[in-house]
Image 1: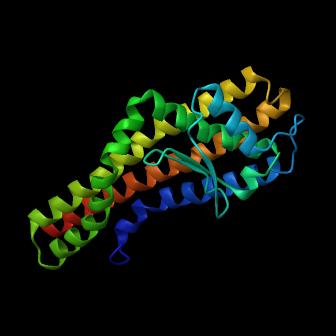
Image 2 (image 1 turned 120 degrees about the vertical axis):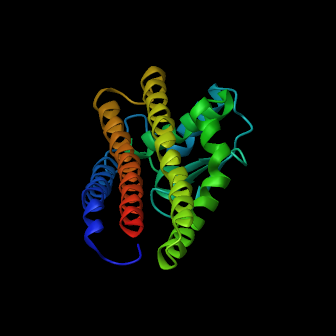
Length: 227
């Protein structure tokens, strides 16, 4: 963002949604991280069991620092769980561990949206950094072609965020199916884990909305400068 002007209003709804989504995941996670599962499995034990049941014996599970920093690394075929999830026996910990296992399943099966997302990551990372620089110079020197290039590069960020949605939803669906089918969670525990994953999904929806709003702002600024 270069300066505050009336195009900032385009971002306001996205900022509000993002703030709400973050508060929701924090509150939902805190609630269900205090509810211990009946079986008493840790997140790491659940992840190991689910990976092994899918033939992924060679995928290690590692500790990672931070809170809600859990992720599956497809490049190195490693699952990384935060301490609260790795050692935790809560409904929230198990739901998150199973979700990351869902990503490992996707990677093993070459789930199309995940393959596409992984393929465009380097281009999107480069484009997200360059888009603002190029657009900025286009604004400063009134060069329409640079404005267009900046917008097109940022469009890649929007595409990435949109592709992320089916990847995350599918991983959550896989997680809930396997947790219920395997008897790792029961009854209200399943409901609680589902609420945690739905709250997490909202953060990805909010990120997609924010990127679209930012793209619309760039287009609005570009049209104003062209005029």
